[in-house]
Length: 490
Image (cartoon, rainbow, N blue to C red; front, side, top):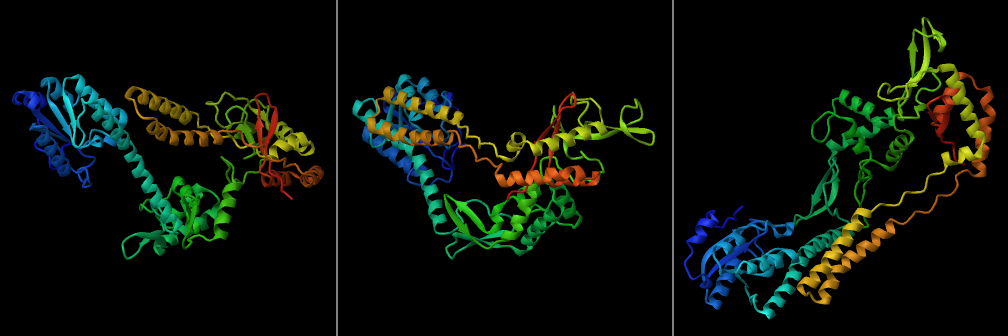
């Protein structure tokens, strides 16, 4: 898109043929900006003056201008662009850039454009450096090209440093504040800390209150909608809106930026936050509240697909136990026919098998230990990024050899990649194995629970399985495994 100061768009093939001869005394001024609003030291008017001064010094007449607002920071350009079209149609044409970083932002693109123009018979000039056909000027151009590539990195680093300094002062460093807050600003208009927006904060507090009572995203959303409350966007509450809000720890009045903790007024106090997180932790995937009288409702899972095993009624076959009127009760995967585990298990036999396996698990340490001991934390997997870093380093070395870059320049370019490579490699290292959770105290608790099992009535058995958040997996053929169990920890 042409910048605000650029002339009307042109058709390069037509205009190029009308340029006066000889081409060796004519020049094209190339202006390149990152945005239409750019007003820094490389703004369009400044570039124009620099190019005109270089043309006058070289004895060239500026016959044409090219102005582009394509950002060099994007790192890619079409090779068949306006520069190359003019160079092909006008052999010996001079191209003048105001600076190396106005050709592009990255070394390989900057140097690549200059080399391609030279291959097409054009003469490339850079204001303040001169004709790049001369070896000394070319060497200076290469150094400037490396500096140009580092400019973008430096800008990002400066922005990051500014945010880090702001966080160190105890101010909100970046990003939007959570719904329920407004960002206060000082007399200079600089943002400082979040302050509570009481109208929205009342809704936030209500979300936490309702979740503590109902213990589920769906039930909480339904209750909020019944009360006529809406989200920050004025929409009805849904599962995702509830889930994201109750997990946003910034409502407790603390946020971390670049290793610095910023504190501000809390909408949710520590007690309310802990209560909700305890409810979240206590719920397993797929868990739901039920008033069913069956022992394995919410406990048994399919060993093939992981879905729930549900109780079904059948009027035929007579194989089920526990006849209800004219129907028989069975246990079967709820995802049939999508799941291949389609066998109907007799309810009485399956309940007895599950209870027996649960009792055996409590009594045998080798079965109980893996259910209570957390698995080793999985190491990070940065293999893709590490491969990219290795390729970037190889590309850097290739460019260094191709363009004869100085050693100090190459080392400076490789250093941040090497540091990132070392950090990611450390993160990918295996994590230590957690300590065994089956302590003597936990064994005593398990023994006490196991000792009381024979005396439990059906209702007591259901309550115990739910209290310990037991999960069982029913394998094809009817084999049963306890896959989850929480014992009180001493």
